Amino acid sequence: MQRPESELLCYSHNSYQVRNYSFVRIAQPRDSRSGILHVPPRFAVRTREPEQALAQLNSGTGLRRAEIAGAGIGGLTAAAALAQRGWQVTVHERAPDLRTFGAGIYIWSNGLRVLKAIGAYDEATAGAHIGPLFETRDHENRVMEEIPINRPGSARLITILRETLTRSLINVCREHGVEIRTSSEVVGATPEGELLLAGGERRAADLVVGADGINSAVRDSLGLLLYRKDLGYGAVRLLVDRSDTDLPAEDKDKYIEHFSGSRRILYTPASERDLYIALCCAADDEAALRVPADRKLWRTSFPHLARLTERFGDAGRWDAFEVVKLKSWSSGSAAVLGDGAHAMPPYLGQGGGCALMNALGLAVAVSEIDDIPSALRAWEARERPLTEHTQEQSERQGDMNLWPDSLRSEVLTITGQSHELAMLRLRTAMHVPTGAAEAI
Image (tube, rainbow, N blue to C red; front, top):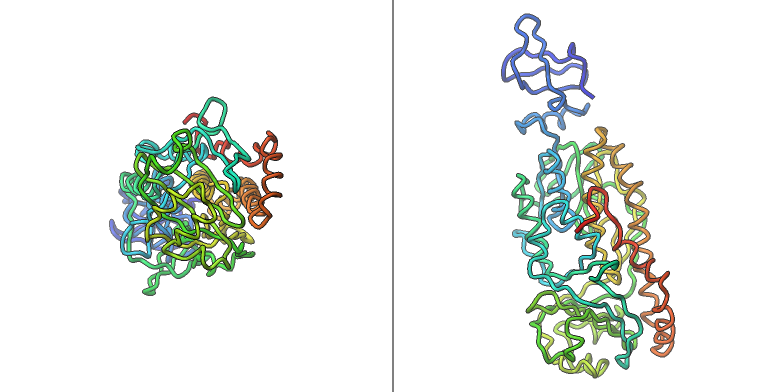
């Protein structure tokens, strides 16, 4: 809240004096008789911390400042949404450039609504693949479960390259004046609103956001971790060119998850020419998690995909599946989102979707409520229940990884006919996020 005018004293056009916590930038001429400066509310500094106030004043804008760790999906979405609401935003990325690992990503209706809300939708979805069905198949290539998508009354689902999504978010950020600093490593944050850099610099802000991944330095420096659970399972992700010979013509545009023993192959067209493949296996299945992928091994497990497995390239990356939960998503004026706050296995394709939703929801909350700690508590109360529902449903989908094929086939064939179970899994996809509209 702005201090009473009697506390805002100025003596010259470029100097200011502190009294009772407030710093004020000279934004308009002072009253020459009284020496009192009448300051518009947008130039009032909402802090008792001199370093924070000086940072805001020295920015030359009088706008509230946000410092964000991580130029991934969550960090860039938060940056764009905050900048669109009048914040001055700097994003810090540890890597020397903004290139991302070339794999695909699922974006359901909820994520598409966020992209629409921040103005990234058209670029992000250009050239996307829009499949007619999502199927789950057993070791004999029989359909166990079928989810209709992209039709009236159903959820929308598109798949794109991760780099396409990232590029669209970067362009929206730049359009709205976000500063993105590469080779800028964040090592921590403080509840008072400082982002700590590896070189010793302390970046003061009204809001600090840790979107710095599953190994989040911001989260760990704030002591927010409740638990981090390795699920003993993961995937080698790779990208190959699409081919008309991989699958029968009636299947080539579908999204299909194939099971065989404890292994899965996720078949995902990501554009007209790109095919995203996830080779999923237990973390102790050393032969299956090897990179480059062992074509013979995967062909033996999935003989009906022989033409596809023969085309596996030498590139790829193993990622372990984990679940992360925090005591709280924030501490003071510092918040954490994305995998650092709510990592989940990818079985529902909602890791990116939750990062998109929670980033936009964060921007809305801190723009509605002036007191940042209060805003962050309100944000968590509003967004966390759905995120934790998504985590729980995702984790349940992995329970069947080590089941015998016959048991899994029998159970999924039965549960796949349940509308109620399908709606539980699609609850997040059908959600209208905070700050977004239902229409896509």
